Amino acid sequence: MGCSPAIFILVALFGSSSWMGTNSVWMQLPLLTSELPERWNLPSYLAGVVQIACIVPLIYTIIHKGVKSFTIPTAPLIISLLSLACCCQLGLAFFWDNYSEVFGAPRSWPLYTLLFGLAIVNAMSNVLFMPFMAQFHPAYLNAYFVGMGLSSLMPSLLSLAQGTSKFKCDDKGVAERFPPNFSVSIFFFVIFTFTCIALIAFIILYRSGAHTHSQNSNSTRKSNSNKEPNEETPLKKKPIATSSSAPEDDDETPIDLHETGAPAIDAIVSELDETYRERSAICNDTEPHPVDYITGVKFTFLLFTTALVNAQMNGIITSVQSYAALPYSQATYHFAVTLSNVVSPLSSFLPFFISVRSMPVLAVLTACSTAMTAFIVYLAALSPNLIFNSFTIGSTLSIGGSLIAAGLHSYLRVVFASLLREGHQSESRLFWCGVFIQIGSFIGSAVMFPLVNIAHLFTSAPQCRPVVP
Image (cartoon, rainbow, N blue to C red; front, side, top):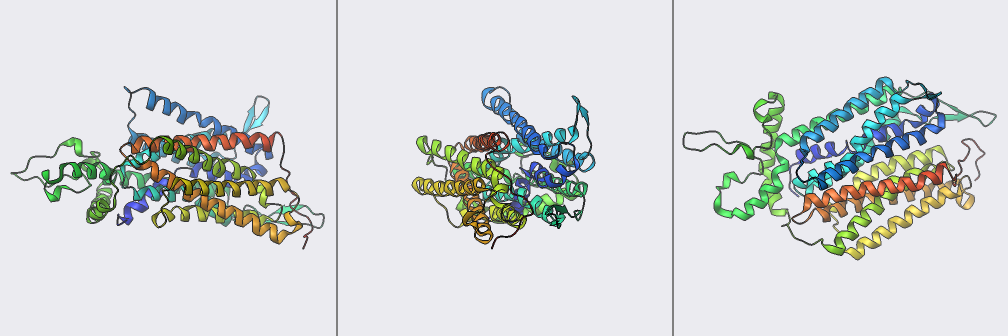
C-alpha cells in the first residue's frame, strides 16, 4: 500500500465526478420546488429524466460488447463526458429557473435538458470510469470509491452551508422558510468548479501514465531479466536520447501530449512521474499476481450482490429516507443524510485494513445491510406516526440506521469491486460490475417510484406539530 498519495488524490477527485451532477440537483430540490412551476411534482419529472438517460449506457454496452470491430477510445470519451458535465453544470448556474409553456403547461425544460446531460455522464461512469480503473494498481480502486462517496458528500455539505431547510413555525402551525445563505446559481457554480477540478485531475492522471502500471507490472514479471532495471518504471516516459541508444517505440507512450501540452501541466506530470517511480517498487511488491479466484458461481454471486447493494443504496433508501426521518425533525433528516455521506467515503478506506474474501461472510454482511434497509423502510411506512411514540428514540434509530446502512453498503461495494478486479480479465469484470451497479440502481428506483408516487404507500408528516416527549 505504498503507492503515491498524489495519484491517490487525483483518482479520488476523478471518482468524485461520477454522480456529483445529479446529486447537486437533488440537494437543491427544496428551493427548486418553491421557485419552478411544477412545484412538488418536479422530483417525479426529474427522476424520469434520469431514468431515460440510463438508456445511454445500455447502448454503449451493446456497442462495446456486441460490435467487436468498433472500438471507442476510453480516455478521450471520458474527457468528452466530463467536459459535457462541466458545460451542463455551468448552464444550470445561469438557466436553472428558466421555463416556458410546452404542450399547454409551463415546463422547466432547460433544467430537464441540462439534467439529462449530467445524468448521461453519471450513468456512463458505472460502465466506463470503473473499467478504466482496472489499468491502475489495485490500491487505487479504493480511491475511486472514496471519490464516489465525495460525489454525494460535497453537494450535501454545500447544501447545509446554504441553509436550504431552515424554517420556523408560526402561531398557526405554518412553516415559514428563511432565505438561503446563497443562491441556487452560486451553488451550481461551485459544483461546476468542482467538476472542472475533476476533469483537470483526470487529464493530469492520464498524462502521468499511472494507468499503465498494471500492464507494465505484468509484462515485467513475464520478461524478468530481459530489461535493464531502470526500464521497469510503470510510467512510460521517454528517456533522454543519446547517440548509442535507440528511440523508444512511440506506441509505448500513453498519450503524445507530453510533447505538445502546456509547460505548467508538464511540470506537474514530471513531478508525479518522480513520485510514482519512487514508490512503484513497493506497489509492485504488494500487487497480487493475477489469479482466477473469482469464477463461475462466485462471479455470479458477486454481480448479484453488487446489484442488490446498489439497489438499496441508490434506489430504495434515497426514495424513502425523508419519510423515515422527517417525522422526527428536519434536523434528523439532515443529520441522517449528511452523516451518511461522511460515512460512505470513510467506509471505502476499510478494505485497506479489513479485507473479506469469504463468500459466506460477504453473504452475511449483505444480509445485514438488507435488514438495515428494511428497517429504514419500516420507519418510512410508520410515517407520520413515530416509532415507540418518541421523537428522541425515533430520531436516534433513524440516524443510526442510516449510518450503519451507508457504512455497510459502501464497504461491500468496494470489496465486491476489488474481488472482481482480480485475475486476467479485470477490465471486463469491472465493466460488468459497473453494469450491475447501474442495473441495481435502476431496479431500486423503478420499484420505489410507483410505490411512493402512484400507490402513495408512504405519508408525509407535517413540518409543524406539537412535540411529544
